[in-house]
Length: 155
Image 1 (cartoon, one colour):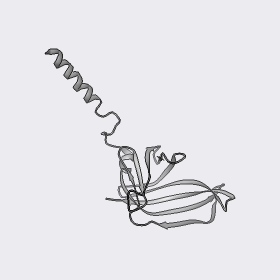
Image 2 (tube, helix red, strand yellow):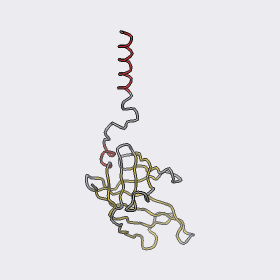
Image 3 (cartoon, helix red, strand yellow):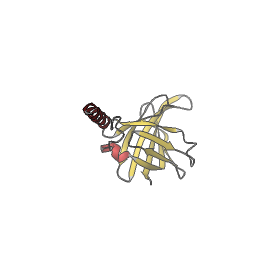
Image 4 (cartoon, one colour):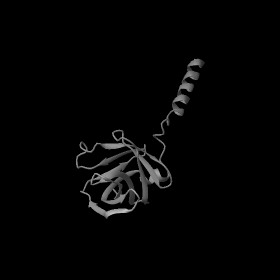
């Protein structure tokens, strides 16, 4: 009988110790806690630069976003971008990691490489961040486009 009690005690201890393995039950802190949740995309501003960092052409375009587009950042370091009213159409998502005081990295398994992002503003109700992608203007002139997302906290 004593062997049965000791075995049961060891089993309970092992189960209790492994309960939080993977970190899924530990609440997020810092930037991750502030990022967690649904963020409605209000506008996306595109800034155009040549390879030297000088503005290219008119330099900027503000794109209003249809209702229902949003980012969802979860406490288990997963994210999803919904760009349609139907969840079956979105297809953008993956994991994210905090990379510093004002930066994070989005990883989408379908993308060729991770997407480094910089936070411009993060409060309880406003989240503004940007990322950049290389391009060639007119198929010739190298440069990049900065995508600035302005979002407000959703329900």
